[in-house]
Length: 360
Image (tube, rainbow, N blue to C red; front, side, top):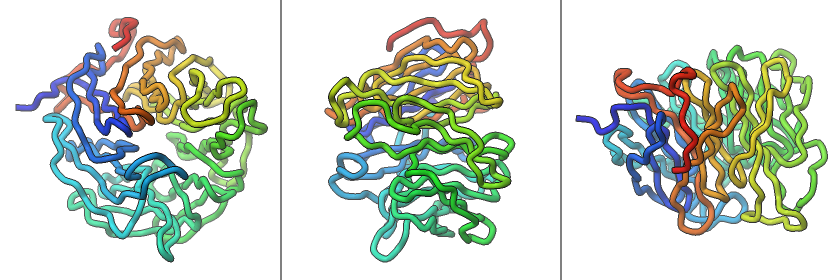
């Protein structure tokens, strides 16, 4: 008998270290699972009903960590228990994670180590054994995205002034898109565009960041065709099922520039035509975004406040704030939306199922 009979939102807390499960309709906390230090990103495999959590560092965060980890935690999201911990060594610092459109491969980004450059590593989705390693020609790939047809991968690289374009079929680099260091990245549902958050996060800057925002890349030409500009740095970028582009902007406290002293962030909502539909305040330091399968609701995990803001994307309005346990800094990070087994649950779709305002 499974415990989860409804759609669930899973949230990783880096310093918990935990995965917290919330009912996706009424936001009740369903359970908390302890995991190894420090979970970063989550990915749900709907075919095998597995939830994956990358364990990136032993403590801390990028550029200020207590050692790079090398584990992938495999979780049964229905019974909320760990079923396996996969050791990815000699790879180090697995972070970004995505299921190939074919459902046969699980891709993970890893930082450079020894003589190896940073790379995208493919695991067989059944056995979770590594089967391919594709270099991105940069040391610090963090987030990446796959085109809907699975033919190319685009890697955002913190330490390199370009986004890496990798041909998955041949395994070769297919291009470099010049950007001044990059953070979040996402592909449009038709594969025509890739959205890149740039420049790289720099906590020495307390005021407006020149040229900050989301670059829109035409995948046919590799050219940046426009930029959604913001005052502060953008970290997470996400594309919904309805082709909305969601971007989380970081806001620093006046006169203070350090991790952990952020003001509430902003979620910007853009249409596919590039027009901004609206903006809503979210938690401090938005770091990960996901959305409901129908594209009605967005979920923004903020690592400094350790919260998840639920946003009605039609109204561009926050409707709930979920609080995630932490032990010091940092807090809420990775997100995964998990539909109920065999369609048993009720996704929060349509006006009749609009969540009430709530703080969990």
